[in-house]
Image 1 (cartoon, rainbow, N blue to C red):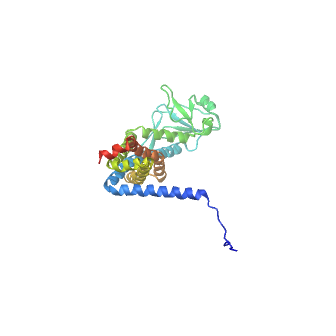
Image 2 (cartoon, rainbow, N blue to C red):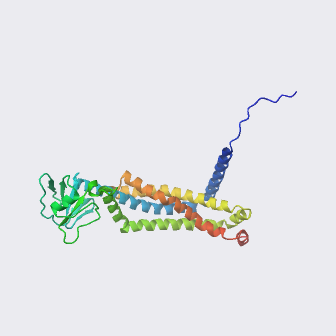
Image 3 (cartoon, rainbow, N blue to C red):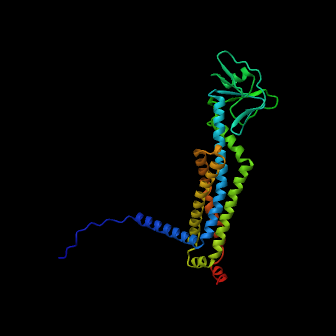
Amino acid sequence: MTHLADHSVIPQNPLDDVARTTDSTFSRLLRFALANLRRRPERALLSVLGIGLAIAAVVVVRTIAAGHQDAGVAAVARAVDGAPYWVVPAGGVGYDSGALAAAGHLPPITVPPGWTFHAAPEGWATITTDATPDEVAAATGLRVVSDPAIAPAPGEGGLVYATEEQGGRGSFVGFDQKYAALLGGQVESSVLGLIGQAGLVLGFVIAVTGFMASVQERRREFGIMSSVGLSDEVLYFFMVESLLVFAAAYLFGVLAGGAVVAVLLPAFFGLAAWLTAAGLVAMYLPALGIVAALVPVHRLLQQRPVALLVEHA
């Protein structure tokens, strides 16, 4: 009688095959993309530099905006000095070149006993009290608001900003966050902000142009792949290649943009501001990379494989 060898059989997990197949597919796509980039290193380098400079422009603007916000919030915190109410003159208070400046003069204000009124030499004042905004408005004769974007109306003698939560009970955003958003919006809407947005559009155009040129050079190769049913792989190849180019350009642009601000505008540079700018750019970078690859490849796949082969035969 023949005895079978005693051994244990370990059932194979189907997910292992799926994982190996996925890893193998991704590695092939990655090798193909790297080989294509090495085929035209000068084009890949120019694409990375062009997109990177555009990203650097955006990073510079975002870093300045974030630094502007941080400096402005710090200036407001020093001016308010923990008081729940900040009284500004009729001309309001503006922020420029790292400092707050008041326009106009405060009206005569008399506060009830127990309240602390402090007039600052810069032209504004603070009130420390547990009273509600309505009570402060009745006592001072001035309008009380919690939004720093609101300026005194013509004819008003001044305005009182409620800097604590009691000034805006229905809002989850504090006075500091609102003031920071106000300063950031001023930078974004300025000429500097428009330059950053134009730079981002220019980088996207450079990416699409580079990928379109690469597609035109390899029409015959992709025609062969499409004729044997590998049209989807063509799309994946260019998506991986696009993401590689954008990733390299992102690293270059973020480092270059931070270096420019740190050297030329050190007053606006801070690690937190730079990281905030880098994070904001990284949020929409993958979408730009995918679209940059889809535009030329979509035009390629709309043609019949035979047309791709015959044209360059």
